[in-house]
Amino acid sequence: MSIEIDIDKEKALIMRMKQNERSAFDELVCIYRNKGFAVAYNFVDNPEDAKDVLQETFIKVYLNIKKFKEQAKFSTWFYRIVVNCSLDFLRRRKTMRKVFTQNLLDEEGKVQQFEDKRYEPGRILMNEELSSVLDNCISELPEKQKVCFILKHQNGLSNQEIARVLKCTISTVKVHLFRAVRNLQEKLSGYLKTEGG
Amino acid sequence: MFECLFVKRKLYDYIDNSLSEEEKIRVKAHLDVCLDCQGKIKQMESLIRQSQRKNIPQPSDDFWHNFKTELDQKLNQKLVPEFNLKTRFSYRLKPAFAFSLASVIIVVITMYFYLHSRPVFLAKEDTDLIEEMNFWEEIAPGSLLNGNEEVIIEEMESLSST
Image (cartoon, rainbow over all chains, first blue to last red; front, side):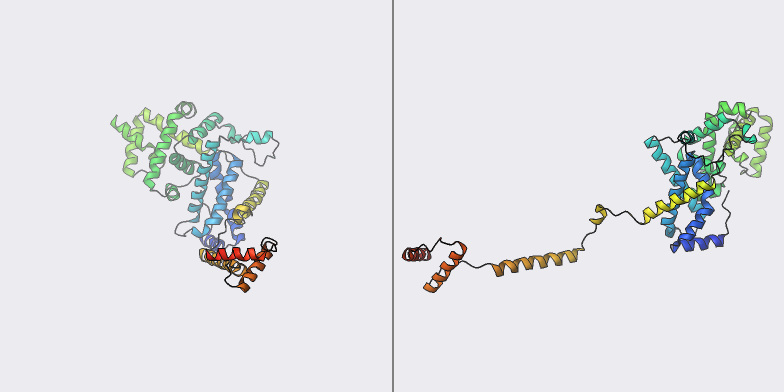
């Protein structure tokens, strides 16, 4: 799931951004917004919250672009900021006990801005209950395990990319992943027997 | 039993295809004969498959339009902070400039009092005495010159002698 962009084009964009060119920033937003949204959504589980997290991410990118040393890939730096913003958001939400749900937004008469895929044919086969319990269990995982699991299994990053994002070794990522899966397996053993076998 | 413990620790790497060839063969051989480990790997695969199926909403064009508008507003607020009293008074004079300014103010005040004040002294001669009396008359009319000049002179002399 790495972001497909020509390296030279990306370097040129970053160079222009470092010279405070706003149009370069706008282009970068267009390139990275979908991937950033997917990562943020997997952490916060709510489109409106994911939007806030992503906006905060892009603001940080704009304000700190001069600190970005082009030794690593921009996507790695970007993912790191999205992850940090998402974790900050989750900590704030936990503290303030705010719960925003899509249902609540609908009740308030807000325009539904998302394609509802709940009733797609492929979706009918999915175990809704397991999906919901799984999301809860993932959200209860220790922070590092949660980050590794989400980036690997929900956003499709490789172990190497995750290691770069978290500034740790690949072995550490593997340990976090193993523990995350083991913890989830323990919590979901009842559901997994009926679903998988 | 020992083999089960070994394989259970390697199951995730087996699914992730990150085992060496030798380890892969060992795990596969064990899986062929161990029902418990077969169950474990099926659970693990099911769990990972389920996580990958998570439905991420696809934002519409309207969503991205609003997103960009709000982002620009938030960014502009960050770049141009709102004017308020706190920021206004946060500006501080540079120490050297402040010190020079304070010195000049002190010198000007001192000069003003020096030039506009008049020393009070006791007259030793008649001309001085008259001048002094006129001075006191200006300040407090009628306090000294009450017509009895001899008494006044005596008073002044007694004062000067003390």
